[in-house]
Image (spheres, rainbow, N blue to C red):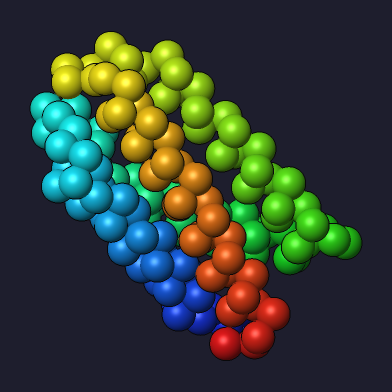
Amino acid sequence: MDIEFDWRKPVAAATAAVLANLLVVVYSIEILSTSTQFMPLTYGPVALFTAIGALGGYAVFEILKTYSEKPYENFLYVAATVMIFSFVTVIYEAPTEAGAGMEEIAMLSLTHVVAAVFTVGVILKMEIENY
Protein backbone atom coordinates (compact mmCIF):
# COMPACT_ATOMS: atom_id res chain seq x y z
CA MET A 1 0.00 0.00 0.00
CA ASP A 2 1.45 3.31 -1.10
CA ILE A 3 0.76 6.12 1.34
CA GLU A 4 0.99 9.60 -0.10
CA PHE A 5 1.05 12.53 2.26
CA ASP A 6 0.95 16.16 1.25
CA TRP A 7 2.45 18.43 3.92
CA ARG A 8 1.04 21.58 2.32
CA LYS A 9 -2.40 21.25 3.90
CA PRO A 10 -1.42 20.88 7.56
CA VAL A 11 1.38 23.43 7.24
CA ALA A 12 -0.96 25.93 5.56
CA ALA A 13 -3.63 25.41 8.24
CA ALA A 14 -1.13 25.77 11.08
CA THR A 15 0.52 28.81 9.49
CA ALA A 16 -2.77 30.61 8.88
CA ALA A 17 -4.04 29.90 12.39
CA VAL A 18 -0.75 30.91 14.04
CA LEU A 19 -0.47 34.15 12.07
CA ALA A 20 -4.09 35.07 12.81
CA ASN A 21 -3.62 34.36 16.51
CA LEU A 22 -0.38 36.32 16.64
CA LEU A 23 -2.34 39.29 15.30
CA VAL A 24 -4.78 38.80 18.17
CA VAL A 25 -1.86 38.84 20.62
CA VAL A 26 -0.38 41.98 19.02
CA TYR A 27 -3.77 43.70 19.26
CA SER A 28 -4.20 42.51 22.83
CA ILE A 29 -0.80 43.67 24.06
CA GLU A 30 -0.26 46.79 21.97
CA ILE A 31 -3.79 48.21 21.67
CA LEU A 32 -5.61 46.90 24.74
CA SER A 33 -2.47 46.92 26.91
CA THR A 34 -3.21 43.55 28.45
CA SER A 35 -0.74 42.26 31.01
CA THR A 36 2.38 40.60 29.58
CA GLN A 37 2.62 38.70 32.88
CA PHE A 38 -0.34 36.62 31.70
CA MET A 39 1.77 33.95 30.03
CA PRO A 40 -1.02 32.12 28.15
CA LEU A 41 -1.53 35.29 26.07
CA THR A 42 2.07 35.84 24.99
CA TYR A 43 3.59 35.12 21.60
CA GLY A 44 5.37 31.83 22.34
CA PRO A 45 2.59 29.86 24.02
CA VAL A 46 -0.05 31.13 21.60
CA ALA A 47 2.02 30.21 18.55
CA LEU A 48 3.05 26.81 19.92
CA PHE A 49 -0.34 25.63 21.09
CA THR A 50 -2.12 26.99 18.02
CA ALA A 51 0.26 25.05 15.76
CA ILE A 52 -0.17 21.87 17.80
CA GLY A 53 -3.96 22.24 17.68
CA ALA A 54 -3.99 22.88 13.93
CA LEU A 55 -1.78 19.87 13.19
CA GLY A 56 -3.92 17.74 15.50
CA GLY A 57 -7.04 18.99 13.74
CA TYR A 58 -5.60 17.97 10.40
CA ALA A 59 -4.77 14.50 11.75
CA VAL A 60 -8.35 14.12 12.97
CA PHE A 61 -9.65 15.23 9.57
CA GLU A 62 -7.49 12.64 7.78
CA ILE A 63 -8.76 9.91 10.13
CA LEU A 64 -12.36 10.98 9.52
CA LYS A 65 -11.78 10.96 5.75
CA THR A 66 -10.59 7.38 6.02
CA TYR A 67 -13.23 5.96 8.36
CA SER A 68 -16.29 8.19 8.15
CA GLU A 69 -19.11 8.29 5.64
CA LYS A 70 -19.56 12.03 6.25
CA PRO A 71 -16.04 13.32 7.00
CA TYR A 72 -16.76 17.02 6.44
CA GLU A 73 -19.82 17.09 8.66
CA ASN A 74 -18.20 14.98 11.36
CA PHE A 75 -15.07 17.14 11.27
CA LEU A 76 -17.17 20.23 11.93
CA TYR A 77 -18.85 18.48 14.87
CA VAL A 78 -15.52 17.36 16.32
CA ALA A 79 -13.94 20.80 15.83
CA ALA A 80 -16.87 22.57 17.48
CA THR A 81 -16.83 20.14 20.40
CA VAL A 82 -13.09 20.50 20.93
CA MET A 83 -13.34 24.28 20.79
CA ILE A 84 -16.13 24.30 23.38
CA PHE A 85 -14.17 21.99 25.68
CA SER A 86 -11.08 24.16 25.24
CA PHE A 87 -12.90 26.87 27.16
CA VAL A 88 -12.79 24.69 30.28
CA THR A 89 -9.15 25.64 30.75
CA VAL A 90 -9.97 29.29 30.11
CA ILE A 91 -12.73 29.23 32.72
CA TYR A 92 -10.99 27.19 35.41
CA GLU A 93 -7.23 27.55 34.91
CA ALA A 94 -6.57 30.93 33.30
CA PRO A 95 -8.02 33.06 36.14
CA THR A 96 -5.42 31.58 38.50
CA GLU A 97 -2.49 32.76 36.34
CA ALA A 98 -0.46 35.86 37.21
CA GLY A 99 -1.73 38.94 35.41
CA ALA A 100 -5.14 37.44 34.63
CA GLY A 101 -7.92 39.98 34.28
CA MET A 102 -11.16 40.19 32.35
CA GLU A 103 -9.48 41.56 29.20
CA GLU A 104 -6.80 38.87 29.28
CA ILE A 105 -9.36 36.10 29.69
CA ALA A 106 -11.53 37.51 26.89
CA MET A 107 -8.59 37.78 24.49
CA LEU A 108 -7.40 34.27 25.37
CA SER A 109 -10.91 33.02 24.58
CA LEU A 110 -10.73 34.84 21.27
CA THR A 111 -7.52 32.99 20.40
CA HIS A 112 -9.38 29.70 20.80
CA VAL A 113 -12.09 30.81 18.40
CA VAL A 114 -9.62 32.25 15.88
CA ALA A 115 -7.55 29.06 15.93
CA ALA A 116 -10.62 26.92 15.30
CA VAL A 117 -12.02 29.11 12.52
CA PHE A 118 -8.76 29.43 10.62
CA THR A 119 -7.75 25.78 11.06
CA VAL A 120 -11.10 24.38 9.97
CA GLY A 121 -11.50 26.94 7.20
CA VAL A 122 -8.10 26.30 5.64
CA ILE A 123 -8.32 22.52 5.93
CA LEU A 124 -11.76 22.35 4.33
CA LYS A 125 -10.98 24.98 1.69
CA MET A 126 -7.83 23.16 0.59
CA GLU A 127 -9.61 19.82 0.63
CA ILE A 128 -12.59 21.02 -1.38
CA GLU A 129 -10.41 22.93 -3.86
CA ASN A 130 -8.05 19.91 -4.16
CA TYR A 131 -4.86 21.81 -3.37
